[in-house]
Length: 96
Length: 368
Image 1 (cartoon, rainbow over the protein chains, first blue to last red):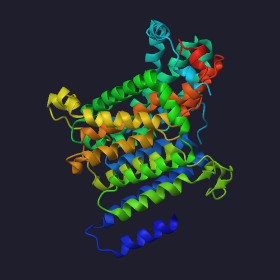
Image 2: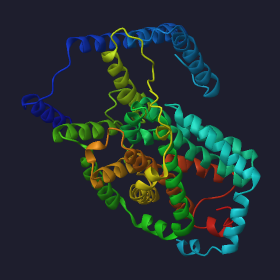
Image 3: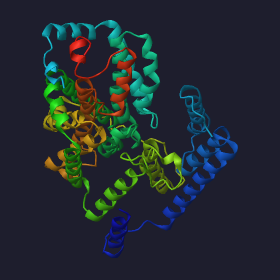
Image 4: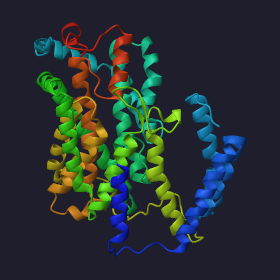
């Protein structure tokens, strides 16, 4: 299966295409998001979901362009609190 | 086998059973189950199966009929609920609704989220009703057909499904082959079902049960959506879900003309879903994608699919809901669960001392 994928990938790479690759800005934002995601997962393993999730949500919302205070508050406080309550008390799972 | 017993069910027993089914208590638990199912189906990562797993032990305190009606309601409601985030956020609540996002989300982005959601609901109800009627009337011959389907026939059917899905590839065949190969590769992760040896887990025993569907759905759809929004965000204020109101009341509802225009799509989806649902192990996700591919191939405007075609929503939601009713055919007639959800319903039967299978029609005909 991996050989099939590699051969097809090679054919795509060598073949002519009208597709325009995205600009450097797209790669930068993607890299920044991946870094934030990785850092958040790493931080959660040290400090826990409760402390890291609000900061992570805030950064992602700001990166996406959200600036409205109410939505930011809901995303930073409301959503992590809802997830924490649901996962911990309803599903009886353990969050990091 | 006692398959001949299946067909011998007295009409008076069926009428008495219908009377029981429409009792207030039973209807309450059905409605309650559907509401719970819709809620958990709409929350990605939870799903109706988990809700059923939590709910089944509590059914011990109920009478047999509501005890079985409740998890069935959760299962059916969960399928409808899964379409809600698929339409609104391009993020299916359940894997079954992944195909719904193909046309549901583009339609929502065009300012018609209510139309898309309502079409998903109406299609689900139509498909589920169709498969329930099939379950009640012709479950016995379908069960015999399903019983004759061995591993070779199932493999042939899956190869057929792959060939049908080739219709969804689009313009680039190579990209389609890569997608199919990646899908097969990811599906191979976990324990080998034949020998239970670990496969492609590289020492991570968390992967022994395969890739978690919620994680795959988040990775495929949610992360890609976040990346898309990041690429479009240039410091401007944007809502998490952008739905503009067109002001046209017709964009908020499904007209009878639109519903009627989908009649052949619905018939095709219902038959696809019912047949695949009667075969254990194939599942509603495959049925939804197959129905979508059939509909796209039969359409006079295949290029409109993936851009908010209401027929695409009808095809997928109808097929995946038809599977749920049909899943009960092998369960009730042969005692074989057609899906994980049906396996949960077996638990509800067994809690009340009943063994699903051919003898159930004879011993519990009224309940069935």
